[in-house]
Length: 462
Image (cartoon, rainbow, N blue to C red; front, side, top):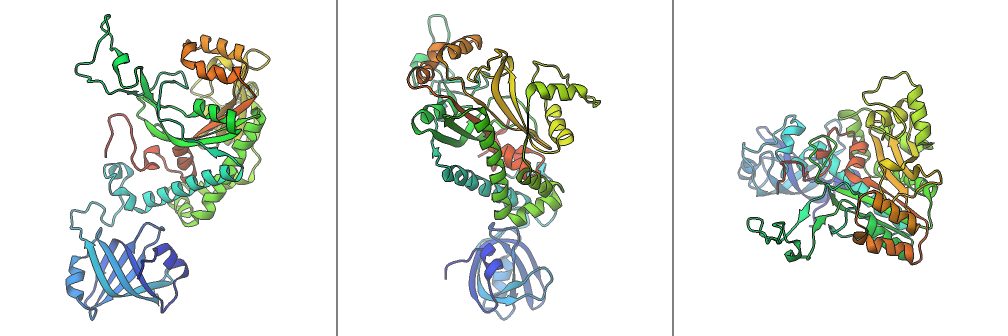
């Protein structure tokens, strides 16, 4: 008999049904003639209770092999459960132990700190909290694809290896096949990158945006969803060296159309996760952050506020609240400013547009005032910026000037400039860090706990 997922069994299993389940033992409680075993297979928060009676064939031998962490297969019959909080349980007729676990198994039945669990990246997914996180992550990822598919977007796989620095910040991991102990040198004793694998310097990508712009110039509406990398030595609860980014790019689109899509996107993803992971989200609301469900409701059922950067600065200057960082036109908003706008002033998400050109990337469209660019940030309560985007600069001469002002070599962006020479159109897009989104949804305090294998300074396992 094929195994039944425990989520399906708990939802639709009926007394009298024959069933086979497979999973890992969470708890075992043996009495004289009975043994109660809770088994979970990761398909849902709850495990299913297995009742094994002493008259089962091979009872003593198999029960002696079972301990917390062991992997088992149970064949049996679904029966009504007399215990509170569970509708059914399974009376075991045959138990097979695939792999045992002894007392050294580190996830015994007690509460463990997230710091401790990060030392057990190979096992922590078996816990309630991390299991719930990764089910939410899965539901959110599927919703991302559904959202864009339903709107006719093409999913494009942008390269992980790149020669371009999209952000111009220089925080990139270098990729090389050279012998670092004895690299080939130029006459000036610099590393001769022409002898490297690609014949030039190569890096891990910080963003798929520029390549997505190429594809948008052929397919109109595209999106990327894949890993990106930042060599930023920031050891905080908000930063990862490897993370996943969602980046749509739309031809024939302006800043307002971009903002509309970003708002629709967040509402859709939150609604989809609430529908798919009701129990998991209730768990986060009960155990992690009691505002998780209220936050989701705030996102789904409120029209986002929209203000310009200039208006935001004016509002911040008028408040009596004391900020750690200064508020001044021309300076980027800090997280405390963003959260004040979203949490205290508007009490809902806020889209801030038209930032000073001097603090934004070269590719953002210069506004007619020559001082600001058609940029936007979506600010959310509790986290601040959750989405950043812009209308892109489609005018060749202005883009060339902006590249020069950023101190970037024009010849490195020849292909990017060609997009403005041949059939240029207004276009726009945004970026959203997927882990930031999952962290926001679940209320988890550390971004390292919403990705299976976090990559951070001085930490790379597996």
